[in-house]
Length: 121
Image 1 (tube, rainbow, N blue to C red):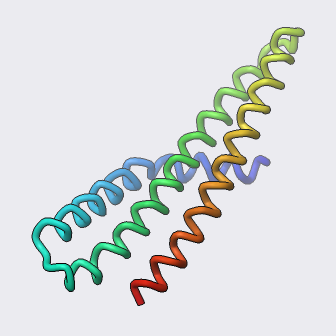
Image 2: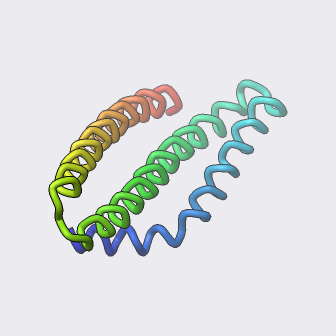
């Protein structure tokens, strides 16, 4: 668990880079739909869309995991009273549900990626 927290803390420093790349990919998509012909859109739109979706998912996962680790560390540092133990169990249940949602999103995005890449190639 400490290894994952370390990786998250190191990657969290690059969160602005993720946002800049996502913004550039969105601009690329808008540019390709407005200014390019449909034949040229195929070569630019599908890879940009897939890269934007994957980077957005990675960014969301990074932000949620960083918030989780810092918030749980604050709670665990305090005296574990009954209220704090219940709060920790509810938070872990919430993060379990959030993790399942991310797993579902990842599987959905994987299927979408394979279908779009098959149509693109």
